[in-house]
Image 1 (cartoon, rainbow, N blue to C red):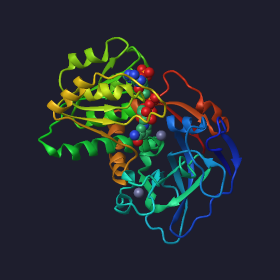
Image 2 (image 1 turned 90 degrees about the vertical axis):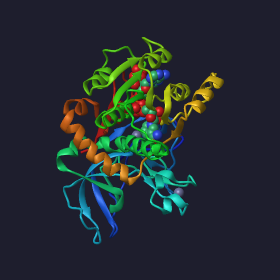
Image 3 (image 1 turned 45 degrees about the horizontal axis):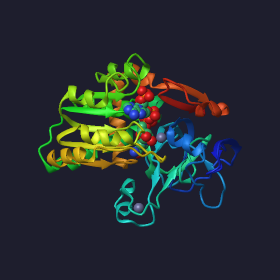
Length: 357
Ligand SMILES: NC(=O)c1ccc[n+]([C@@H]2O[C@H](COP(=O)([O-])OP(=O)(O)OC[C@H]3O[C@@H](n4cnc5c(N)ncnc54)[C@H](OP(=O)(O)O)[C@@H]3O)[C@@H](O)[C@H]2O)c1
Ligand SMILES: [Zn+2]
Ligand SMILES: [Zn+2]
């Protein structure tokens, strides 16, 4: 079968290669890959900045945003049937840290986890992939076509779940939230918070009138542009923010996010920033406001299996409420054979997918 692979840490090494269809063990499921989402992590792996191969081979099959259909099931697998849509959880536990042992490998303390399509485990950008049934999330048939959004959606589900857990330190009734960034993470986060009844501002650089601003407004968010008004003035005009989620990919916005939160507010940082950017920060002001405002700042990565199940429920609600917006997020579909096009940078791109079967 064909697989899209890289030689980890080698610049622009993505290539199609022939690999055997995986054999499945008794507790495993063979999945036919339908499509895979492409995000900044895949682009960084392709650029040689990130990624590692499974033990014993010198290549890594890409793909962590999966969507596929069950092809066959191992003898001891129950509850899975040929023809069912499934999505694969990305992370696997390390060898025994307290959190992985408790089923929270998204909170791994050792850092020795593996991740499919990223770190030491082949991904889903191949005609078939296999996994243990416990790492596969079943998707209702009517959501199959958009289920590739479940992986990024699980990330934003975790953000909200963690914020709610942390905010049990007080009476927290969040009314107003800001999401910084209008990429797939920002838009999915905004959908989730609006569904929870919050008034949501989505901040990004581009002037209004682009696809991202239109999608944000279609779900009822207020889109604000930092190229039209300074971020500081945007926040002053809004007033108090109960929840701020930073998802712009720009580390300098993390400090602005902390300052933007109001009293008792919570700030979640999600941007994965691999560069060496340095900025000067008004540290007295940011610190003072954080202390006097009882603010909490936390980082969040990956997601628990719970967040995937919550994500399936949310995806159903999003499709009931905003089907056109969800579908419009798929801006660029690339056949597997033309994978190079998936790594091109395009303006107004939201979610690029590689179409496999
Ligand atoms: N923590 C996790 O588990 C996890 C998982 C997946 C992704 N991520 C991270 O989440 C971040 C967002 O991912 P994505 O795929 O949604 O990104 P994306 O498609 O690159 O979108 C980034 C958005 O942020 C906006 N932006 C960039 N710099 C900005 C700035 N200085 N001020 C205001 N807005 C700014 C962009 O605005 P314009 O469109 O106007 O340029 C764009 O709307 C990335 O850093 C990614 O690495 C984290
Ligand atoms: Zn991704
Ligand atoms: Zn661990």
